[in-house]
Length: 554
Image (cartoon, rainbow, N blue to C red; front, side, top):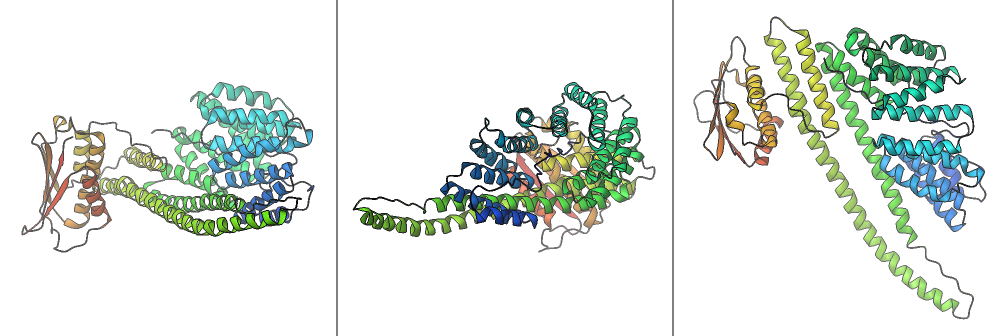
């Protein structure tokens, strides 16, 4: 069994006088009602409204020429963005905020270190690990206190681990363990050290340290820390003791619901899909899919909302032009300027409304296309793949549990690749994969005959075309098993030099005239179009079904 690489969520750096969940607030130098209102919204967990109020407060601070106030507003907007999964937006706003904090003024240290930490957190989640280390390391210059310094160095070590620089991470963890810290932090570092040593050397016995860290966190009632310990133990035991790995994966899933961490629930479900018995895997997969779709929709909506708020503010700035003159022509100049501003305002309103409609239309279109694309991939790769595994389980009297687990694990890897838009790995020659696919649908009462499927047939066919053909044939076979009641199925392949022709026949109930295609056959039609091919259904036969598929070789 293969061991998946689990990327742990970054532990958010907590400063002694700054909490990421409560944002940055200090005594105001000037009255700004928007600034106060923003924190009232934060207390109610209304991030969109708080973001909007900080944006308005920023503009008022600009009018008041309060550069520190501007920087604090931008910093809070950046933290809200990253906390809502908009890492690009959070990174951009934090970079803008940095110009408002003076590195030479001691009172600005709290803002500099918070801003650099937010940049490190956003960049780490964008998987730019080298730059994340730069930001975290620079934040150390503004740290005061042993505990905040220890936590930040632990974060730096975590990034080194994600980069695969295990020895560097181990050196940092070991130095931190020598320092006197509280039980919560000691458990964190001990667990990270044990995990990293095991990642560096798979023979390393990490269990004693991992279990010790777990007990320390239980004694301290550290629910966030327990989540990390359960994840580490599930990873460690996946190969050595799958039953123990399953136990800790279940504990992590239950604990993540208690602390309301959606990302941890998703990672726990991924582990449960891999480790659970076949009869439970489908339930966990459906739960994972529903949760993943939900959180993606929420985060995309949040990113769009923050972008629209920033766009609206920038537009309003163009309408707030004020010129003052103290000479005799002041009144006349104000009238001219007011007329010009009014024209700009009216024109801007019409333009803004049109632009807003265009943005909303494009956004909805992009979301719809993304959902359709993902739905198609999930149907072809995961749903049909699961159906194929179910078919093998149904038709095999002597079930090889490891073989089934490998199949399910392969589906897990493919489903994870879908979320990252990665191409599927190819481990076997294409003609062998096709033969294996077709014969997997054979049973004691159903024969599947194959002719012409040899390696030479596919030599000049592109990988993309092979990918589409494999899923087209898989969809035909799934539909055959579900609906045809056929006892004989034949698939013949021919190459005439310019085209490849595939002939499918079965002796089932056939396809009634006028029957509407289901989602799978519609996807088949779309795939045929993408490779400039054609599919012909012969429904005139007295019994059974005949299908001809043809497509150009290059």
